Image (cartoon, rainbow, N blue to C red; front, side):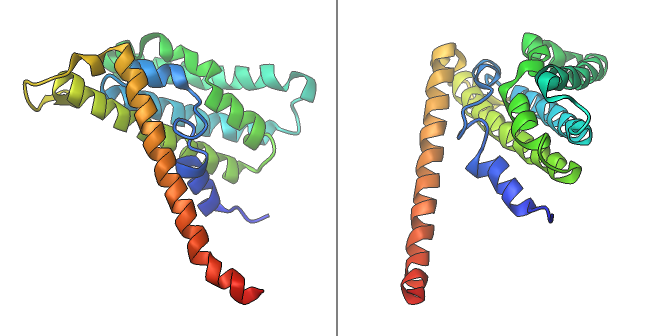
Length: 211
C-alpha cells in the first residue's frame, strides 16, 4: 500500500497536532516553555524517540504478543530515551539540566505511547518513521513558539538574547504557562475552523455541479 506522506505530514503538523489539537504531553508543555531553547530541546528529544520507537515497533509488530504489547512498547521507548539522556548529558549538559525530570519522563509520554499503539503497530516502517517525524515536529514547533512568547514577555529575551529590559513576570510563572497554552489552543482552533470552513465553501459549487 502506497504511503500518503502528505496526509501523515498534515496530521502531525495540523490536523492531529499532539500539543494544540490532541492536547497530549501537557506536563512538559507547561513546565518547559519558559524558554524557546527548552522547547526545541525537548521537542527534538521527543522527535528522536518517536521516530526510533515507531520504526522498531513497526518492525516487531508481528513478533510482540498482543497480551504484552504495552510493556514491550514502554521497554522499547525507554531504550531510546536512555540513549537521548546519555548523549545529552555528555554533549549538552546545560540543556540536560534545564530539562531535568521531564527528560526521563518521555518514557511515559502520551504522544509516544499513543503513536506506538495507534499507528506504528499497524503500519509499515517507512510510514511509521514519517509519522514519528511529523508528530515530533508538530510537538517541537508548538513548544518552541510557546517558549518564545513566554520568554519574550516574561524575561525580555529570546533564545537567551536580551531584547529589552521590559518584562511581565506573570508569563514566566505557572499561571502564565496555562494562559499562554490556552491562547495558543484557541488561536489554533480558530485558524483550523476558518480554514476548514473556507475549504467547504470553495468545494460547494463543485458539489452542486456534481448533483
